[in-house]
Amino acid sequence: LHCCSCCCLRDDVCIILYSRWTPLFRHLSSFDGDPPALIDAETIFALSSGHGKCGVAVVRISGPASATALRCMAGLTRSLPVPRSALLRSITHPQSKEVLDRGLVLWFPAPHSFTGEDSVEFHIHGGPAVTAAVLQALGSVPGIRPAESGEFTRRAFQAGKLGLTEVEGLGDLIHAETEAQRRQALRQMSGELGHLYQDWSHSLKRVRLIYSPHLLQSLLCNVVATKETFYMVRHLRDERRGERLRSGVQVVIAGATNAGKSSLLNTLCQRPAAIVSPIAGTTRDVVETALDIGGFPVVLSDTAGLRDSRDLVEREGVRRARERVEQADLTLVVVDCSLLSTDIKQASDFLQDHLNKLPSDRFLLVLNKVDLLPEEQRQMLKLILGCISGLPPVCMMSCHTSEGLQDFLTTLHSRVKTLCGDPLSGAPTLTQARHRSHLQHCVTALDQYQRYRDLDLALAAEGIRLALTSLGRITGKVGPEEILDIIFKDFCIGK
Image (cartoon, rainbow, N blue to C red; front, side, top):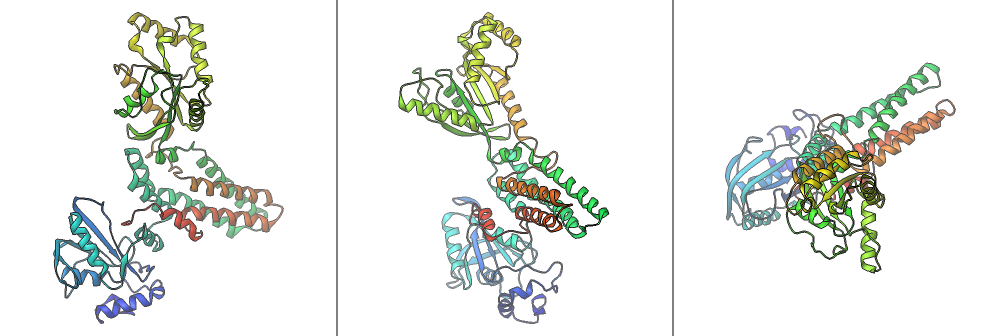
């Protein structure tokens, strides 16, 4: 079987051995560097670049028959190309020998490839007809089939090339739409989050190994477990910053009717996303749009005006508005400033009444329609606002003239950045509800260890085991098959 690291047997014989002895090859060390971690005898292919017209399309192949596909489609009768070096070749149909395109081919022998298997990439022209022809030709090669969603990355995980948190980081990087999302995903894909959980696992494994009824060792175990529990609890108290950054900060526009809520939505997204009308109660349902605020993702929602109404449809809209505010990370309370009194007490009561109607505690007060006020009244209003205590941050602006818009955007960006945190500073944060759930189970299991440490050795040890299992479900070291299905279901076909 050592033939696969030399040239003493024909390549087709090597491929047969390579496929049939997959489990044994996992334990061989005859390859240079790390041994290949072969996962599946099947060879898969897919378009790994975007669909549609483009300058260059990348077709990826992975599995034991990759070399065969490369030879028969790139006209290589003898040796394979230099690994990881581009070679310009004509791409031909394996049966009719018709030239399909002329492009670059790259050869990645196992185990030094993304999947840990023999892999090939065809860099071809990105026209739909060219990519369709190449994919159809690959389908005619015996032993090769189209890849399923996320199958390349799944094989990389199973080969030990990536941990589960790194896989999730890769998926987040592919779907990242803002600069902050890209930074967080890249940091997770580099393994920082996985290494943090692995360090905790190693500490708890030491506790499990040295645990005994003797006082000295028991105290040592208690110190280690208490320390890790403290770090985990602090890690959980991150106010969901990483999860917000991954999925978007939920910002809801709320307030009374005709205050300019829909106008504010249209101003921020720079398009007529919501209907604007002088008729009160125009907005009945939630209008939602995604924005990039200074590199941070925001999901902005316009809601129905808050008022009592006999109209059943409008009442349902108000109910949905309150429900959305309850779920919001930040609420923009829009107020028609032309309705504000110049009396401090009346102005304070007016604004507090608006805030008290909303089931939230994270506000940004937006005083709209400032263009309707004369300059003297604007200055008076600023003085009044400075004398009212207990107000959230206040922005005065006009959606009609864009006056004060830049100051509002600066304040909004500051609040969103605070809610998300800096993805590049401090310890890596939780990015998914799955992580949070398993980590909470881990802390609960360590609490069990603390309770039974001096009472029942078996129950205390079981607490450590459950804690390790919970951490393993995050990193992929322990866990059932359905966890993998959850992770890889959102990946595209070519990844």
